[in-house]
Image (cartoon, rainbow, N blue to C red; front, top):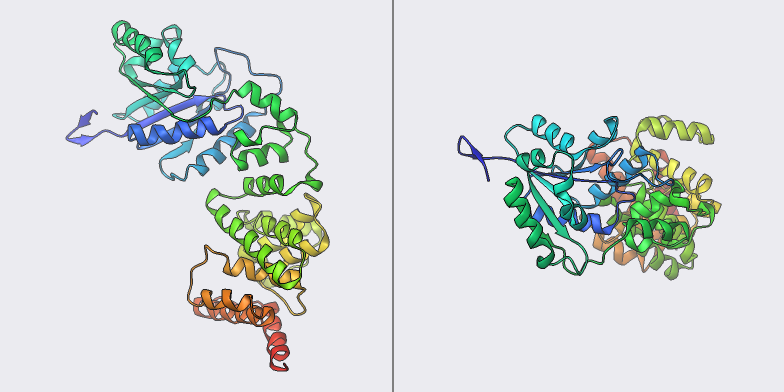
Length: 409
């Protein structure tokens, strides 16, 4: 490692490729590189126009490949370390690695650069455009993804590059990872398969945008595909909550006589617009004719329930009872259906929730549905008061109704 003034230089990895699409092999290579090389930053860099091959005719637009790369980076859960760069997509002409490395070196003076590449690229590196310049500026890091990518294959090329170019070379393998052919994967996607080689969020993005010849009917998705689409719309850190809400809603539905599948589908979609901006929420509510009160107009936390219901209805064709459950899952209301109560409670008490009183709520939810929802209302109102937030009148109406109902038993 180089040092300047006694301080260790920042270690920056550059991982380029067409990412067409980014698959589990790319994900594991990125994760391993960060850990093995001790990188401070890793740049995932989709190529604009690769110099060594033509992009296939079905290649998605640059913004789609960039979006899928961002979903991959988000799934790695290394904020501040793994990031996506559009450097090559913004640059006109061929995406020469020599130009990319030179630009990163210029932007990050003093940093130690590591250029990541797969076996095929490593074995042909001596023929790359301005290979000596690249070797002077960056450590070459080759990873083997297939079973045959072993040391006997790496060693001769490593020795050659060291001898002829003075290159610094690091090689490592990714044991147990099955090789993923991007060409074959695109063929499988067009045939309605291939999801098992992708992150669910990336697969969902492909389905929603009908990339690679996919023809999914978004209004009639099976549960796995619906999950993938939902997860593609949120940050990876939100997925455990959505999964927990789904399983809790299914369990409560079975306990209280609601439709289990409806509970699952509503739970899968209940937070699909959680990361929308206020402007995006307001625009969709206006488009769908959703009336909003003054509190909702300025509270994103409440609006995502309204827009989530709109997306469930308009994009995914979900039945009205599910959409209504999503619509009311934050504030609740008086006169809630069993499904609405199930989703309200599932969202509130799923396994990742951790607050005073949650265990009592979980226990009560299996004993008395109305009393559990009432407790949820009361806890929510108390929390809003403690935070100094305005309490939505629908929540108060729901609480008051259930107070009377349970008191009459």
